Structure formats: C-alpha cells, structure tokens
Image 1 (cartoon, chains in turn green, purple):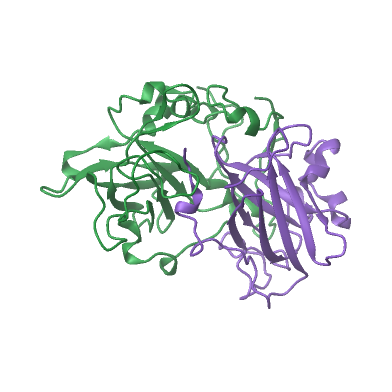
Image 2 (tube, rainbow over the protein chains, first blue to last red):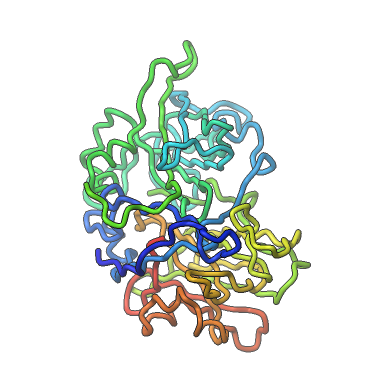
Length: 254
Length: 180
C-alpha cells in the first residue's frame, strides 16, 4: 500500500519547553500487520479503505491517551467464569502473560479487555444467530489491568469455533478478542488470540491475513504445563507487544 | 461472526460524555455516522475519541504544557454505532495543540475505529468545518487538498452546538485515514 511520507520524524525534545518536539513511538513493521483490503475476507471489500494512508507525525495528540486505573475494573472482572449465578459449561482455562513494549519494557497498569463466544461457539449478542445454545452463565467479556511488571491473568472457558458466512463451509478457529490501550493513542491495539494446534487455522482468512509467518505465530497462544492448575484449569500463555517509544531508524535494514 | 463489541463495551463502560456538562469550553454534541463503500451504514462499529481540553491540554503525564487541567473534562469517549451506523458524544471544542516545528494544530479529535471487515484499528481525525485555524494546521497541510473536507465535521442547521461527521470507510467519499 502506498503511504505518503511526511518527512523526518522528531528526534526528541531538545528544548524541554518546546512542546512541538515529542518523543514519537516507533513505526510498526508492516509485515506483521494485516493489510486493510484482503479479498479472501469478503467483508473487507466493502469496508477497507483503498486510498493511501497519510503518515501522521507524532504530536501531543498521538503520544497521550486515556489512562485507566483500579476504579475502572472490579476484582472479578478478569474471571469470566464467576459473573453469573452458576459456572459456565466448557473447559476452564487461564490465559495469562505480559504486556511489553517494542523496547522490551513491561507496560504496567494498562487496561486489557477481552471478549469471546461460549464453549458452543455462540456469542451473547443480538446479531449472532448461530444455532448453538447460549449459556446463561456466560457473557464472554472481561477486563483487567496489568500489574507493576506488566503481567495479567484471565480465567475463562475455552471458546468454541463457529461457522460464518465468509465462504462455503467457513469456520472461525477458536479465538479470544484482545483489546489494549497501552500508554498512548498511538499504542492502541485490537487483536485476536488463537490456540495452538487448532486444525482450522490454515483455513481462516482472518488469521492468514497477517503476511508474516512470525506475525501469525505471535497471535497463537502457547500451552504451558506450568500454568495449569492441577485438577482445575489448563493454562495458556499470551504475551502482547505494543509499540515502544523512540524514532525508528529512517532506513531499517531487514 | 465476531467481534461483537457490545459484549464487552456495554452501558457500564461506554463513554458518551467526553466532557462533563460543566467543563470549560464551547459545548459540542457530535453525531458520528459510519458508511461503507456502497454507502450502507455500518452498525456495531467501535468509535473511540481522544481530545484535548478547551485550553489545548491533554489529561496525560506526557503533556507537560503549563496549562490547566479541567477536573470536569476527561478527554476520552467510546461508543458503538447503532442500527443506523450512528452514535453521539457530548464534549467541548478542544483548544489548539502544538504540532510539528512549533506550529499550532487546529482544534481536532483523534479517532480510533474498529468493526467487522476491518482487520486492524483505523485512525482518523475530526476537525471543525469553518474554523479559522484549519488553514494553519500543519497536520491538515499533509493531507491532499481535495481530501481535507472528509475530515470536517459540519454544523447541523437549526441545532446550535450540534455537529455531524460522516466517516466513509471506502468509496468516492472515503475519509482520510492515518498511519499513526
């Protein structure tokens, strides 16, 4: 995709009273990101922008962003199995990991939200008409803050795969939607987490829209025996990397 | 087919009031409407807004301008578009924020947008049509002249303080989107 380059990026505030110079966030490697227009995912044909994106130099508008704190989450918001009178049906799992920035530093106190369908593959949403049962003990939404070292943990049940109308016999692999704010408007991230060994992955256009094999590998969680809790739940690890600060070298050599 | 934003963004954590009613500044009721390439409205779209207060200061530690924070101003909004592809925010018109090389940007809202059929977050801005500062904005100057109008919210006739902005994901009226 063509991109207008607006010129060199600021290199940092030389004069601390000059608020026009800000420390920008590093540019994203485009190979790890899906394009907007991806015809195997049919809905992108009507919803993907076709014109070049304008490169936006980072100003105070981009390096600031909403800050969430402990008032924004309740203690049980990270446990999707304890939001109703009874427990939901399905395989109990924990999903945990760290949020890091592109410089390898942990991102503490950042809000993570997840949402998912139930074990039968049904979302609690008026549009979802998939013929699978709703679970009265499962809503599918959770939120948490990372701790001081960037760690987070959710308890949930493993979502089921479900059919969708993208193409004949299309099925989404089991997945959990992740939404993070990071430290600024520039670090906002929405992604999907998948499960290792899922037989549907090779057939999914949304998964395959990520151009780079490493990028696809990064969105698959890892099963870790040391994260299982004996007699109680299996554990999956999913680390998320958000953008870090500092100017990207003008010409990156890869 | 997911994502279904209202599973997690529900009444409890959607944010319609970017600024409380007693925040300083010119009150703005902003109506956003999202359309696809075929001019069909796009319901169930997550729209998030981030903006400065009336003085042009952000509620965030990275903004160290010696300007006051307004306790009644939060700066963040988040809504999901309804069956008509539309949603509303209550806010105040932001002040001007410094931009590249010391030039002041025109009043604007940062916008993040996500919905089915969009594979990663879309970033855009909303400016206010007719604002004298638009002609001096160093970021607007990066946008091809013929496309700048796609970033302009329009005042609604007969409803002072109400502005309407259409976001066209694709098509002849495609909105400018940014690589942030």
